[in-house]
Every structure is written in structure tokens, then in C-alpha cells.
Amino acid sequence: ALAWPVLAQTTPVGLWRSVDDASGEAKAEIRIAADGAGVLSGRIEKAITRSAEPLCTQCTDDRKGKPKLGMEIIRSVKKAAGHDYWEGGEILDPEEGKLYRVRLTPLEGGAKLQVRGFLGPFWRNQTWVKAP
Image (cartoon, rainbow, N blue to C red; front, side, top):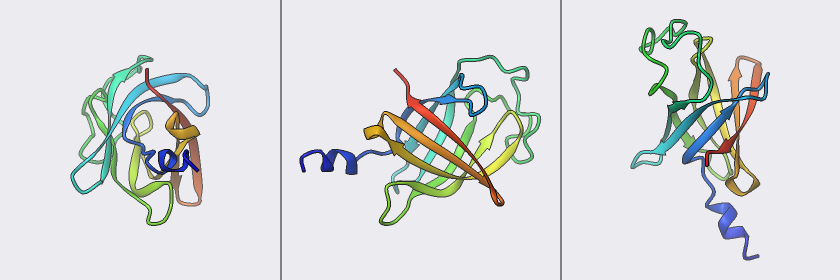
């Protein structure tokens, strides 16, 4: 009963180490922050593995041609009413330039973050870990 309040306060806000869903390797550190209305966004704060292309050449929106380092890759995510996940926004894969609808779900008491991107009927999962 005492652990419930701690779990209820777990959010995606913080510094996360993204882990590639195909290779399992850490790629970057992403800082997720909330604005005053509780809307989440996330930026690439640090590259762990060097990208072959430092600019987002595959992007098709306002991020096209911009540096990946410092880029906002998560936009407009909000807590789902009555649930322990955040959704409603989008996440960008800066390597491929693809935009996905996103759902962020804290796991293991906030030690990990499930990042699920949806593109039509298809989805991708990554499990990010809290950065040290």
C-alpha cells in the first residue's frame, strides 16, 4: 500500500538513454521535459553513437537539414486520462525522417520507459533506460 503513491507519480520526465530496437545498443540521451500545462517534449541532449549524417536530411518538416544534436524529437505528448501512459503526440526517428504517433509508458518504477511509435497499423517499440 505504501508503494502505490510512488508508482502513481512516475512520469517520463527526465533524462533517458535511447536504445535501438534492432541492435540493442544505446544511441543517444534524450531529455524529456514538461511545460506548464503538463505537455511533454523531448530533445536529443547527447549522442552516444556517432551518426553517419549529423543533420536530419531525411526529415520532411521544419527539422529538415537541422542538426540532430539538440533536435526536438518528441512533441505534444499528454497524460492519457485514467491511465499510466502519455500519448497524443509524435516522435521523430531522425535517422529515417519518419514521424510516428507515440505512447510513453514508465516501467519498473520509472527506471525504464517503453517508447512505442505507431505508423498506420504498424508499430515499433523501444525500451529506454534512465541515464546515469
